[in-house]
Structure formats: structure tokens, C-alpha cells
Image 1: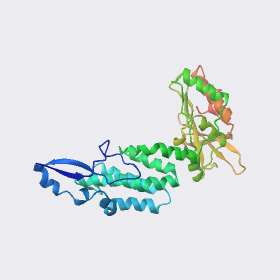
Image 2: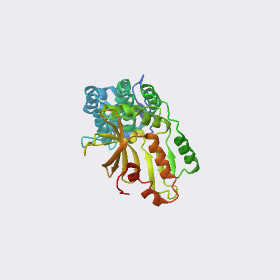
Image 3: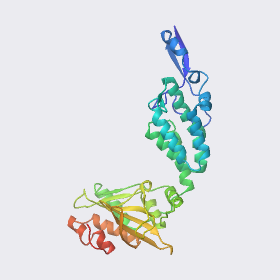
Image 4: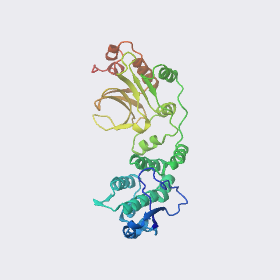
Length: 332
């Protein structure tokens, strides 16, 4: 004789019943047939994982309360994301604080975590910062929890509407890069245009500004990688993707700044604005500032294109070296 016992489905991976809309959300349960020989074990399932549903787990689990506390008390999403990552990393192994959980209890707790994210975290973060909500989805997806990916398109639209991209630059140098990407895809790789400049807001909140022209460049392409036409394995110039923009620390008379470009191995080019609102381009080697010059973005891109088009790689250490561009003694 078979009996039906209802318990919460396993939410690791693509499992039946795992896709959870944000609202409305009914109790999550999957009806599973258990043979009578297993009935004695089935009835001993913790009551929180049986027909009483996930609500009891949501209210009483210390794990859920910890997540809810991080969500409601922190002024930023980082604290919640840190707690969430720590918990899901353990739950992948059916563990909580070093204790191995019975499978049904682990299933219920995973379901409750996803449910809290769906019902509480995403709506709150969406209202405050859609990008933070997307960071939560990114972290879940990285650990194999893709149940809420259906929310990603609307969150991306919300982020784009809040921080729309400016008008894209339309310089001839960029047209040349597009032509090079079609003719030599192994040498020139272009990213798609950004639809949002949320990253500039995050940098600004951290005390680092980006020039309007640089934002216009990202509106044209979210990063590019150029190699030497003569020797394709040699990188010569790149615009970092918006999500990969780094920061260089203050020191040696230079303020904190945004590392937006790379000039090849161990070379990065950062930008900053001084107190007189003048923009500067800084040449760094192995993360140490070497020299600076007034920022002329179009000149910089033109120089990078010239480095890409060299027919002899030795030119990269001569007239087309970064030392020559910045007017300093050679290092390349």
C-alpha cells in the first residue's frame, strides 16, 4: 500500500516545483508517493518539513531570522549578501553551522531561503537599488540556485530606467574598431553597449568619478580588447568592462582613481579629477603610478588603435610605447 506524504521539494538545481514567483506565492509543496515499507521513516520526518508547509520554517528557523535581520537592519545590501552566501554555501552540503541536516529538513530550509529572497529581499532591494537585487540573483546563480532568474529581465529594466546610459560616442576611431572587430576578431573584441550606467553611481558613492566622455564610450561598447595585429597574442590596449572597473589607491601624490583601461601586461591607465575639475590620465606599471597627462580620450583611443595596427611588434617598445605617449623614460 502506498501513502502520500507532502514535503518541500529539493531546490538545488532544476527540480520540479523550484521556480518561485515573487507574488503571489502559495505554500511550496510537492506530493511524493512513499511505499508502505518506508512509512515508519516518513512519519518521523520533522513536522516543519511536512504538510504544515514552509511558513513554520520561515518564522522559526534561526537561519531565516539571521537573513531577515541582515536585510532589515543593514543600510546596504552587502551584509545581507554576505550572510546569504555563507548560508547557501553550507546548505548545498545539507549543513547549518557544521551540523549535517536530515535531507527533508535541508530541503525545507533551502526552500525557505529562496522564499525569503523572493518575498522579502528582492522587492525591498528593487525599490532601493535594482542593482543590489541583481547582485543577489548573481550570487544565487553562482551556487546553482536559478529558481528566481525569471525576475532578472524586469530588474535589469528597472536598473536601466533609473540610470540610463548617455548618448554613445560616435567618433571615427570607434567605427574603425568595429571594422577591425569584423575583419580581425582575434585581434579586436568589442563588448555590447551598456544600457545603464549604474556602475558610475556606485563609483561615485565610493568617492570616485568618471568623465562624461568615458560614460559615452561605455554607451558605445562595454569594454574592448585590442591585440597586436602583427602578433595577436600580445595585448596592447583595452577598455575594462563596466563591471570590472578597478580602483587605484591613493599614494605618491596621486588620489584614489578609477582604473578604466589597460595598456598591456602589467600596465593600467586610471583617471581622476583634481580639485580644479581637470581630468588626468595616469600611467601605472605593476599598480604603481609612473606618470600622468591631461586626459584626451580621443587621443588615447587613437593611440591604442595605432598600437593594434603595428606591422612589427618592436614598434610597441619605440614610438608607440606608453612611455613615449606619457613622455617618460622607457620601461617596456
